[in-house]
Image (cartoon, rainbow, N blue to C red):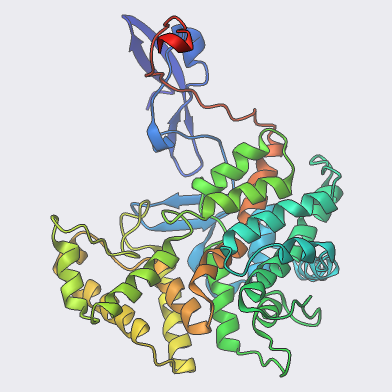
Length: 428
């Protein structure tokens, strides 16, 4: 293969270098396109054919159903690593040894107390406020309590900032849910592991002891790992482009949370449960809705099936389906909505229409089932997604700053009015 690509514009040929990644992905470097062509740019709505950066964090091959963090397969990480190990891997590039992991966990716990004045900001929100809006605001507010900007060239300064947000973010997540439920706010228990502490902070009632359920701990640990990073998606790209202006980490994360909020991104698992609720209200006939999903004239869409990137089975869904089955079996939840979910999944996996089109249940489908069975409100589903995605966002922000990437500044093709004279208001 040639190491250059040739474009002909207005009868003139221009050569551009080809960039080949370590997994043999090929990209055409058009960074000089406007300069050499006299202003010609590309038009790529949604940036589906545009590589915005070079990154060593996550490799995703949607056609083959491959997802790897720093070279490690998602299947092996979910089976053998903890969420904190994966967080360390994503952010710092290598899996931690025991000493590094113990220090990481200890230092995160040391930073797990949130300034009490943050409670005043939380108090200002009504209970009806969407948890993602609350979480984004609280994350941004951390900037006010940590005003100094991080020196990204200092490993020590960067490490301190990482453990600070890793320690405080689960508290904000728990407080967001407890605010909605009218429960007192808690700072957690430093004797517990990261995931165990998250569950206790979220669910402990003031009048009884909280008992850990290892099956729930395992399921949540896996969910957080599966959501930890996913290449240059909407929220990750947002974190990078906001950070490219040298905005601080907390402000960049807050922007990423807002991007994740949308139903086409992190809100997909919430949309799944809303769809299941609607099917239940209609009588719960899954076959009817499967037929509607196959009818091109019907506006109904089956949420949680297929994936925009994965053209085969979502590798994360294979992993989390097992955890979902274990959670449902252990809790013995009797819930018609979950029964509908299981029925839809079983039918889709055996229906030729869905099988031929590879419209399999994805990670959003199964994560929604797990969160509902655990007792997490549907509005909190995307908040849990953000908790898992936190180390990926941090890793991407850190990489972008260390690579000294330029400020993000996409171009456009203007389609508005051409020059026209101003009209006085009396003549309009």
